[in-house]
Length: 98
Image 1 (tube, rainbow, N blue to C red):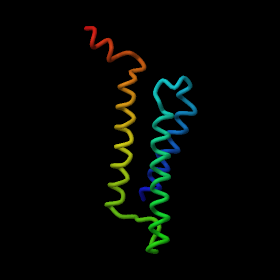
Image 2: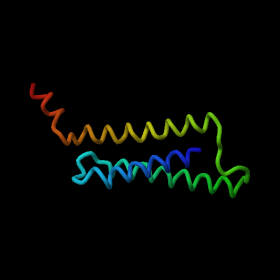
Image 3: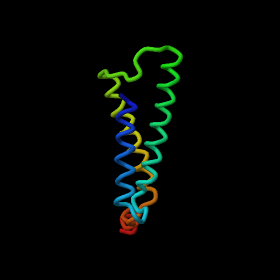
């Protein structure tokens, strides 16, 4: 389940980056890289687990769905922090000035 949700989120982020973030202002490319990296990591984990232990390749349980949501939320938090640090519209700098 994690693999499916992360791959879907990575595809959506990549499509948004390609279509909407022409100047790189919102760092959607960074979000896309985070999600694709996580997707590849989970794919390797699933393949190694399947080869070593056998069983089902996709786990469709409530816990797997919850973990999928948590992984996407963590990726979004990391992206938002990087966006706030970069402050592309200068809104945080305006708050500091008064």
